[in-house]
Image 1 (cartoon, rainbow, N blue to C red):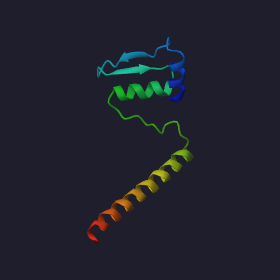
Image 2: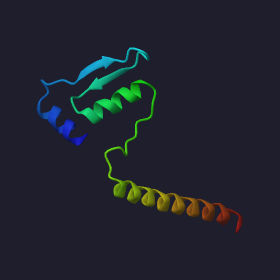
Image 3: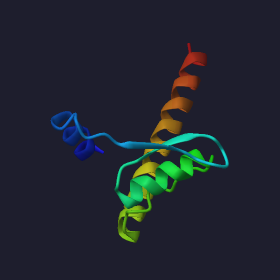
Image 4: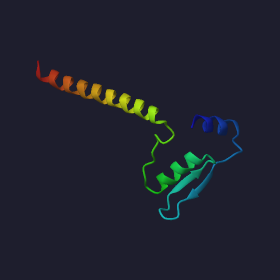
Length: 88
């Protein structure tokens, strides 16, 4: 995404094509990048794109572990904070 932001900031004369999904009537952008265009169409169709699609299996596993650790830490902090309110 950063590439596109930088590119269009440097080349304001080049525009991304905007289309409307026939079935849903939702607008979406056509960037010329196959993956981004696929995600745009899926959002226009009301689907949730798989943003992990470009990741390798190892990267997906690493991200799953990172998110699990984050959720565990958040849950622990939430419970600890809740209990502290009643320990006064």
